[in-house]
Figure 1 (cartoon, rainbow, N blue to C red):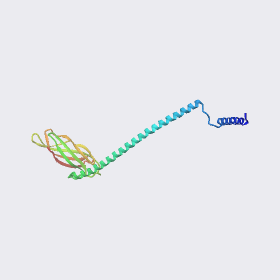
Figure 2: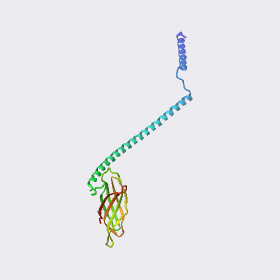
Figure 3: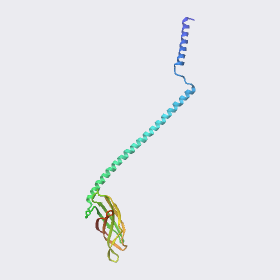
Figure 4: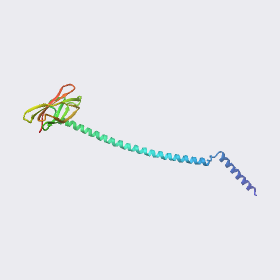
Length: 210
């Protein structure tokens, strides 16, 4: 065998031995089958957790978008309602100016009064309004003195039990009250008293419509 062949084999053996030495002492550690399976299981678990977190993130994002859309819709509705309130306030101020004032010029007046009713009953509808909005609210007593004609042709007046009513800026008072069963109302005098002070705030007389 030529000398160079022996030298070649010797070099191969030395190289292989050196590679084995480096791999064993300085190279990455080789995993056993159990360790490899365990690592694969952990990687799979981490991948599953990541997918779950991604799904939760998408769900939370959808909820946030839905809440944002709902908030925008509610804000739009609120702005629209505020605009309507402003318009109604303006219209109400105009109506207050148009409705005839109580001729007594009192702190609380009867701006409008309508009275009707068959025999034995009195239907009433009144609009009470403070002269100044800044004035305190009133707790009032409303008394009706009904003048009418009885079935036998005689005339008379019936004073009815007072009605209690709290009045803020303005207040509608409406209802039906009993009068003597054989009386047909012709005229009614309304007296409104401030319960707190006992002061008569206004007195007005209205015709009863047929």
